[in-house]
Image 1 (cartoon, rainbow, N blue to C red):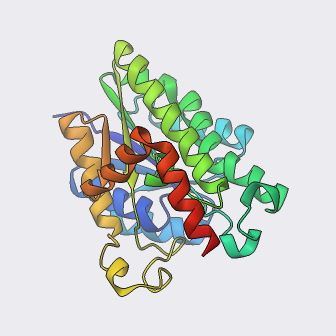
Image 2 (cartoon, rainbow, N blue to C red):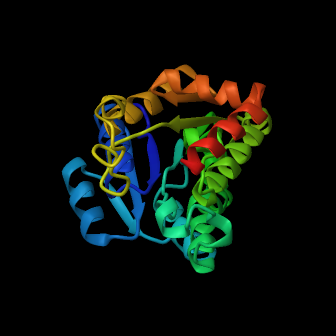
Length: 258
Protein backbone atom coordinates (compact mmCIF):
# COMPACT_ATOMS: atom_id res chain seq x y z
CA UNK A 1 0.00 0.00 0.00
CA UNK A 2 1.52 3.37 -1.05
CA UNK A 3 2.41 5.87 1.65
CA UNK A 4 0.00 8.75 2.13
CA UNK A 5 1.19 11.95 0.44
CA UNK A 6 0.99 14.94 2.79
CA UNK A 7 0.64 18.52 1.53
CA UNK A 8 0.58 21.71 3.57
CA UNK A 9 -1.32 24.58 1.88
CA UNK A 10 -1.11 28.05 3.39
CA UNK A 11 -3.94 30.47 2.73
CA UNK A 12 -6.10 27.39 2.33
CA UNK A 13 -9.35 28.81 3.69
CA UNK A 14 -10.61 30.48 0.50
CA UNK A 15 -9.82 31.57 -3.05
CA UNK A 16 -6.77 30.06 -4.74
CA UNK A 17 -5.65 28.18 -1.62
CA UNK A 18 -8.99 26.42 -1.18
CA UNK A 19 -9.05 25.55 -4.90
CA UNK A 20 -5.54 24.11 -4.66
CA UNK A 21 -6.55 22.04 -1.62
CA UNK A 22 -9.63 20.66 -3.37
CA UNK A 23 -7.63 19.76 -6.46
CA UNK A 24 -4.88 18.08 -4.46
CA UNK A 25 -7.44 16.12 -2.44
CA UNK A 26 -9.02 14.92 -5.67
CA UNK A 27 -5.54 13.76 -6.76
CA UNK A 28 -5.18 11.67 -3.60
CA UNK A 29 -3.20 14.06 -1.40
CA UNK A 30 -3.95 14.46 2.31
CA UNK A 31 -3.90 18.18 3.01
CA UNK A 32 -3.15 20.27 6.08
CA UNK A 33 -4.64 23.72 5.56
CA UNK A 34 -3.19 26.82 7.21
CA UNK A 35 -4.83 30.23 7.51
CA UNK A 36 -6.02 32.83 10.01
CA UNK A 37 -9.79 32.40 9.69
CA UNK A 38 -10.75 29.28 11.64
CA UNK A 39 -14.38 29.25 10.54
CA UNK A 40 -13.53 29.16 6.84
CA UNK A 41 -10.64 26.76 7.44
CA UNK A 42 -12.89 24.31 9.24
CA UNK A 43 -15.44 24.44 6.42
CA UNK A 44 -12.92 23.72 3.63
CA UNK A 45 -11.13 21.05 5.67
CA UNK A 46 -14.42 19.31 6.45
CA UNK A 47 -15.36 19.37 2.78
CA UNK A 48 -12.21 17.54 1.60
CA UNK A 49 -11.29 15.50 4.69
CA UNK A 50 -8.27 17.67 5.50
CA UNK A 51 -6.65 18.81 8.73
CA UNK A 52 -6.18 22.47 9.56
CA UNK A 53 -4.03 24.76 11.67
CA UNK A 54 -4.93 28.35 12.54
CA UNK A 55 -1.82 30.47 12.02
CA UNK A 56 -0.69 33.88 10.80
CA UNK A 57 2.24 33.01 8.52
CA UNK A 58 3.63 36.49 8.99
CA UNK A 59 4.35 35.66 12.64
CA UNK A 60 7.59 33.64 12.70
CA UNK A 61 7.09 32.23 16.18
CA UNK A 62 3.52 31.20 15.35
CA UNK A 63 4.78 29.46 12.20
CA UNK A 64 7.37 27.53 14.18
CA UNK A 65 4.70 26.36 16.65
CA UNK A 66 2.33 25.40 13.86
CA UNK A 67 4.99 23.47 11.92
CA UNK A 68 6.06 21.63 15.07
CA UNK A 69 2.45 20.53 15.58
CA UNK A 70 2.08 19.36 11.96
CA UNK A 71 5.42 17.55 11.85
CA UNK A 72 4.61 15.73 15.08
CA UNK A 73 1.70 14.12 13.22
CA UNK A 74 3.32 13.97 9.77
CA UNK A 75 7.14 13.80 9.94
CA UNK A 76 7.32 13.32 6.18
CA UNK A 77 5.97 16.20 4.07
CA UNK A 78 5.91 15.74 0.30
CA UNK A 79 4.55 19.17 -0.68
CA UNK A 80 4.50 22.69 0.76
CA UNK A 81 2.35 25.27 -1.04
CA UNK A 82 3.16 28.82 0.05
CA UNK A 83 -0.01 30.54 -1.10
CA UNK A 84 -1.02 32.86 1.76
CA UNK A 85 -1.22 36.50 0.73
CA UNK A 86 -3.06 39.76 1.28
CA UNK A 87 -3.92 42.60 -1.09
CA UNK A 88 -1.96 45.81 -1.11
CA UNK A 89 -3.21 49.41 -0.92
CA UNK A 90 -4.77 50.73 -4.11
CA UNK A 91 -3.65 53.83 -5.97
CA UNK A 92 -6.70 55.63 -4.66
CA UNK A 93 -5.76 54.84 -1.06
CA UNK A 94 -2.17 56.05 -1.45
CA UNK A 95 -2.56 58.95 -3.84
CA UNK A 96 -0.77 56.81 -6.42
CA UNK A 97 2.63 57.08 -4.66
CA UNK A 98 2.46 53.80 -2.74
CA UNK A 99 5.55 53.59 -0.59
CA UNK A 100 5.47 57.33 0.16
CA UNK A 101 1.83 57.56 1.23
CA UNK A 102 0.71 54.06 2.28
CA UNK A 103 0.26 53.32 5.96
CA UNK A 104 3.65 52.07 7.27
CA UNK A 105 2.05 49.29 9.31
CA UNK A 106 0.22 48.10 6.18
CA UNK A 107 3.48 47.96 4.20
CA UNK A 108 5.13 45.93 6.96
CA UNK A 109 2.15 43.54 7.11
CA UNK A 110 2.30 43.01 3.35
CA UNK A 111 5.95 41.99 3.49
CA UNK A 112 5.42 39.77 6.55
CA UNK A 113 2.55 37.83 4.98
CA UNK A 114 3.29 37.87 1.25
CA UNK A 115 7.05 37.34 1.41
CA UNK A 116 8.38 36.45 4.86
CA UNK A 117 5.50 34.02 5.43
CA UNK A 118 6.91 31.82 2.67
CA UNK A 119 10.42 32.11 4.10
CA UNK A 120 9.32 31.17 7.64
CA UNK A 121 7.16 28.26 6.41
CA UNK A 122 9.94 26.78 4.28
CA UNK A 123 12.46 27.02 7.11
CA UNK A 124 10.04 25.47 9.59
CA UNK A 125 8.98 22.61 7.30
CA UNK A 126 12.42 21.73 5.90
CA UNK A 127 12.80 18.65 8.17
CA UNK A 128 9.56 17.20 6.80
CA UNK A 129 10.46 18.04 3.18
CA UNK A 130 13.88 16.44 3.60
CA UNK A 131 12.30 13.32 5.11
CA UNK A 132 10.01 12.90 2.09
CA UNK A 133 12.59 13.48 -0.66
CA UNK A 134 11.94 13.82 -3.52
CA UNK A 135 9.53 16.53 -2.35
CA UNK A 136 8.15 19.80 -3.69
CA UNK A 137 7.72 23.45 -2.75
CA UNK A 138 5.24 25.61 -4.66
CA UNK A 139 5.38 29.38 -4.19
CA UNK A 140 2.27 31.18 -5.47
CA UNK A 141 3.60 34.60 -6.46
CA UNK A 142 2.03 36.85 -9.10
CA UNK A 143 2.55 38.43 -12.49
CA UNK A 144 2.95 41.59 -10.36
CA UNK A 145 6.15 39.93 -9.14
CA UNK A 146 7.62 40.06 -12.64
CA UNK A 147 6.20 43.41 -13.80
CA UNK A 148 6.49 46.40 -11.45
CA UNK A 149 2.96 47.76 -11.06
CA UNK A 150 2.06 51.00 -9.23
CA UNK A 151 1.35 51.88 -6.49
CA UNK A 152 4.12 49.42 -5.58
CA UNK A 153 4.04 47.77 -2.13
CA UNK A 154 2.12 44.66 -3.21
CA UNK A 155 4.19 44.29 -6.37
CA UNK A 156 7.41 44.60 -4.35
CA UNK A 157 6.39 41.78 -2.02
CA UNK A 158 5.73 39.54 -5.01
CA UNK A 159 9.02 40.52 -6.66
CA UNK A 160 10.74 39.42 -3.46
CA UNK A 161 8.82 36.14 -3.48
CA UNK A 162 9.71 35.45 -7.12
CA UNK A 163 13.41 36.11 -6.42
CA UNK A 164 13.25 33.87 -3.33
CA UNK A 165 11.57 31.11 -5.33
CA UNK A 166 13.95 31.30 -8.28
CA UNK A 167 16.93 31.14 -5.93
CA UNK A 168 15.49 28.04 -4.27
CA UNK A 169 14.85 26.47 -7.69
CA UNK A 170 18.59 26.77 -8.36
CA UNK A 171 19.71 25.29 -5.04
CA UNK A 172 17.19 22.92 -3.43
CA UNK A 173 17.00 20.33 -6.25
CA UNK A 174 20.54 19.33 -5.24
CA UNK A 175 19.11 18.03 -1.96
CA UNK A 176 16.03 16.42 -3.53
CA UNK A 177 13.50 19.26 -3.15
CA UNK A 178 11.98 20.65 -6.33
CA UNK A 179 10.73 24.25 -6.38
CA UNK A 180 7.96 25.69 -8.54
CA UNK A 181 6.89 29.32 -8.99
CA UNK A 182 3.29 30.04 -9.99
CA UNK A 183 2.56 33.55 -11.31
CA UNK A 184 -1.19 34.18 -11.62
CA UNK A 185 -2.54 37.25 -13.36
CA UNK A 186 -6.02 38.57 -12.73
CA UNK A 187 -7.82 35.87 -10.73
CA UNK A 188 -11.32 36.31 -9.30
CA UNK A 189 -11.20 35.56 -5.56
CA UNK A 190 -13.01 36.89 -2.46
CA UNK A 191 -9.85 38.64 -1.26
CA UNK A 192 -8.90 40.00 -4.69
CA UNK A 193 -12.15 40.77 -6.61
CA UNK A 194 -11.35 41.60 -10.25
CA UNK A 195 -14.44 41.47 -12.45
CA UNK A 196 -16.12 44.85 -12.51
CA UNK A 197 -13.21 46.45 -10.64
CA UNK A 198 -11.16 46.66 -13.82
CA UNK A 199 -13.65 49.05 -15.40
CA UNK A 200 -13.53 47.36 -18.78
CA UNK A 201 -15.66 44.48 -20.10
CA UNK A 202 -12.87 43.31 -22.39
CA UNK A 203 -10.45 43.10 -19.46
CA UNK A 204 -13.10 41.28 -17.42
CA UNK A 205 -12.92 38.46 -19.98
CA UNK A 206 -9.23 38.01 -19.21
CA UNK A 207 -9.91 37.25 -15.53
CA UNK A 208 -9.27 33.59 -14.68
CA UNK A 209 -10.63 31.41 -11.86
CA UNK A 210 -8.91 29.87 -8.82
CA UNK A 211 -9.44 26.41 -10.31
CA UNK A 212 -7.27 27.43 -13.27
CA UNK A 213 -4.40 28.17 -10.88
CA UNK A 214 -5.01 24.98 -8.91
CA UNK A 215 -4.74 22.83 -12.05
CA UNK A 216 -1.46 24.50 -13.00
CA UNK A 217 -0.06 23.87 -9.50
CA UNK A 218 -0.72 20.15 -9.92
CA UNK A 219 0.74 20.28 -13.45
CA UNK A 220 3.90 21.97 -12.11
CA UNK A 221 4.40 19.28 -9.47
CA UNK A 222 3.60 16.34 -11.75
CA UNK A 223 5.73 17.53 -14.66
CA UNK A 224 8.44 19.32 -12.63
CA UNK A 225 7.82 22.71 -14.26
CA UNK A 226 9.94 25.38 -12.52
CA UNK A 227 7.84 28.45 -13.38
CA UNK A 228 4.32 28.83 -14.74
CA UNK A 229 2.17 31.86 -15.63
CA UNK A 230 -1.62 31.62 -15.33
CA UNK A 231 -2.91 32.16 -17.98
CA UNK A 232 0.17 31.39 -20.08
CA UNK A 233 0.11 34.62 -22.08
CA UNK A 234 0.95 36.64 -18.95
CA UNK A 235 4.55 35.65 -19.57
CA UNK A 236 4.62 38.21 -22.42
CA UNK A 237 4.49 41.39 -20.28
CA UNK A 238 7.11 39.87 -17.98
CA UNK A 239 9.43 39.32 -20.95
CA UNK A 240 8.73 42.84 -22.24
CA UNK A 241 9.68 44.48 -18.95
CA UNK A 242 12.81 42.34 -18.68
CA UNK A 243 13.85 43.32 -22.22
CA UNK A 244 12.91 47.03 -22.23
CA UNK A 245 12.28 48.16 -18.63
CA UNK A 246 12.56 51.85 -19.54
CA UNK A 247 9.75 51.59 -22.09
CA UNK A 248 7.45 49.85 -19.62
CA UNK A 249 8.19 52.48 -16.95
CA UNK A 250 7.32 55.28 -19.39
CA UNK A 251 4.05 53.60 -20.36
CA UNK A 252 3.09 53.11 -16.71
CA UNK A 253 4.01 56.72 -15.93
CA UNK A 254 1.82 57.93 -18.79
CA UNK A 255 -1.05 55.81 -17.51
CA UNK A 256 -0.58 57.22 -13.99
CA UNK A 257 -0.76 60.79 -15.29
CA UNK A 258 -4.00 60.13 -17.13
